[in-house]
Image (cartoon, rainbow, N blue to C red):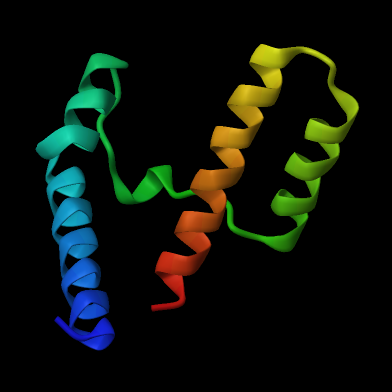
Length: 87
């Protein structure tokens, strides 16, 4: 496959996963159900620059490894959502 074909294939896979998550199916829907919530349009991630800077500042200020791990996951999620919104 060419790089362009791989990119398009990956984009379709992501869109399919998000469609399943919105319906409450698939891995993301199952995780949300286990946590007692259902994925919805209302549970959007704040992808503003202010939110990004806030996470970076909190990561820099903390010494707790568990908090660093959680904040890093939040940062990855924010960046993913930001990139997904720009496609």
